[in-house]
Image (cartoon, rainbow, N blue to C red):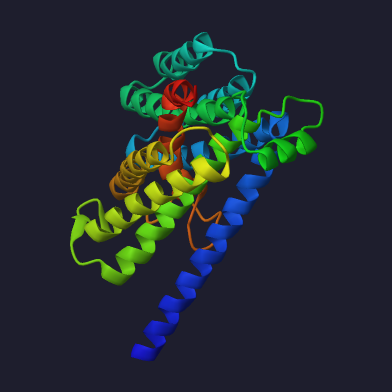
Length: 300
């Protein structure tokens, strides 16, 4: 029996690793291309994730609220178009207003307020990170020579934005490697539960391992991608981003726990749904997008 259990654990770890690497590769290729390709890829991923959020919402509030599909897709396109702060305000207005109109004119009143609240939160949950991701990719500026060469070669008529590419790659790698380190350290050394009422499998040791992995990744990416800031700053950014990613992970775990589901979907073998894969990334990319002007100033 023990041998069978060990084999099953090994199989799950292998499947998770293969799926994780595959997802990262699938995400990195559109990021390398940038432009409308990356915008459409981000929009599609956000729509898939919103569909999973909507399925959870049906369990929690009984509502359907389909308006978020349009808003999260539009947010990704607006980010690529670098539409500015008014676009972010428009996204927020649409996220609040469209489900409100639907709820107000619904023929049956009970449950409409809960549907409106969840639809608004679920839409913003994905729309703001979608805008942040595509907008971050458009950031202009210098980067490592090899990254400038790659971005120039893969830009088919649109701005290559090598610095934006470096920032997006750093974001993706921080999210991926912090998750991987948290999983490996948690499985190997985990003894103390982090928040068992929300996520029974997460440990304090795993969370620390994930944050340290994110810190190392941040410092390394600053050097490799030529982002012109101190590696120490990259370490700090990575560490904070890793901690914020843990909050994003726990937030999705809370939704699943409340809804009584194990995974948000079945899209990715070993990982569950799209939301299961990007729950930390949603928070990490928003954080890095928000502090990018500070990083720009530090780069001088």
